[in-house]
Structures are given as structure tokens and as C-alpha cells.
Amino acid sequence: MENNLALKISHLHHSFPEEEGRKLEVIKDISFEAQKGEFLSIVGPSGGGKSTLLRIIAGLVKPTSGLLELGSSRIAMVFQNFAIFPWLTAYENIEFGLKMKGINVRERKKIVHEKIKEVGLSGFENKYPKELSGGMRQRVGIARALAVNPEILLIDEPFSSLDAFTAEKLRKDLLAIWLQYKMTVVMVTHLVEEAVQLSDRVLVLSPRPARIKLELAIPLKHPRDKRSQEFYALVDKIVAEIEQ
Image (tube, rainbow, N blue to C red; front, top):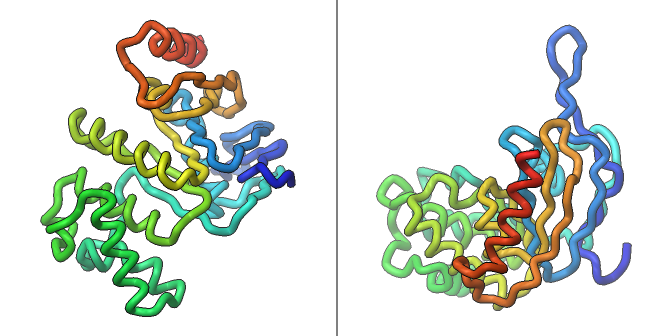
């Protein structure tokens, strides 16, 4: 794989087994690449295989066939439903991955405090998930992913369950973190405006079985004006492709 690539997918297929030996084809012959430091978003109809594709990249699902190449083993994922441990505090949740990697206590403490400050969780370190708002729980999930210093960050509809104000604040925070660290980000979202607001490039998937219908570069500088004609022209182009 070329040195400038973070990941490369070639002719990926995936099916889920159903009753009576039948198979549900979810992904059909998908191929694409992501550059190092690129913010790539994947959009498409609901139930079209976007999250399955992301889980294949994460190594959580084994594809039926095709090739997946990764430029780094340092991968972390932020889930839609937060996926944090309810019996651990915010601090302990963020620390969890570091403990699994065998990082010593002193270094763990330094990293966790750094990430807590970075994502705006100062003062909430000792709170349990049930004591936190949805936005704060997602901040814990983001901080936990960042704590392991990933080179590839996978994000599965991270703001879909949040209110509009909280989601917008977290988008801006995520953008600031990406601009600072320039890790490769692959994000699945059902919100086209979110994809155009954050991404360098957007992949539009077809209805199931998912294929790539459109690959669109977003040539706008950050921060992006969501009210501009250029912004909405890109949004309209993607929406039209999804609705065809």
C-alpha cells in the first residue's frame, strides 16, 4: 500500500446469513481509499450498510470477501450509542484503553487529564454515565478514543441522538481536534449537512446492497459557512444522489 494511504478497500462484499440458507447482501463490490490525515464521510439511505462498512474497517466484522489494507494498527472508534461502561466514572472510562495497553499509572494519569481538558469534561471526571447528559457521555466516548492516540479514528453517527445545540457544539470540538492532530477520520452519518460541514470528501452509498454512487470532494476552507451558496450546492448534490 502507498505510504500516503491510511486505508485501502478493494472489491469488498458482505452478506449476513438468513433463514433457510439465504443470505442478505449488504455490501456489494465497494472499493475506495482514504489518505493519511483526511476526513472522509460516508452517507446514504438508512439500513444501507454504512455502519457495517465501518465495523469491517474496525475489525469488528469480517467481510465475506474483498481486501482491506490499513496503514496503521492504531485505530479507535466512537460509537453512536456512546458504548461507555456504566459502572466506571468518566475518568475510568477514558483510562480503560490505556490500562488494556499496559500504560503505567503516571502516564495514564497525564493522558487522561489532557483528554478531559481537550473535550471539555473538566469537573466531570468522577461522574458516572448516569449522572451525565448525552452530550457529556459522547465527550467521554470521544476522549476514550483519543486517549490511545489513534492514527485512524472511526466515528459512527456520533451526534444523532443529541439535541441540535449540543450536536453542533460537539461537531466544532471534533473539527478542532482533527485540525490539531490530523489523524485520518472516517465518519458515518445520515446528516448530509454534517458531512459537508466537516469532511474533505464524501462517499455516497446506494440502497442495500451498498455500492458507491458518488465520490465528492468538498473544496471549502474551514470554518465553513453553512449559509453560503457553495455549501448548499454541495448539500443539494449529495441529497439528490441519495434520493435518486
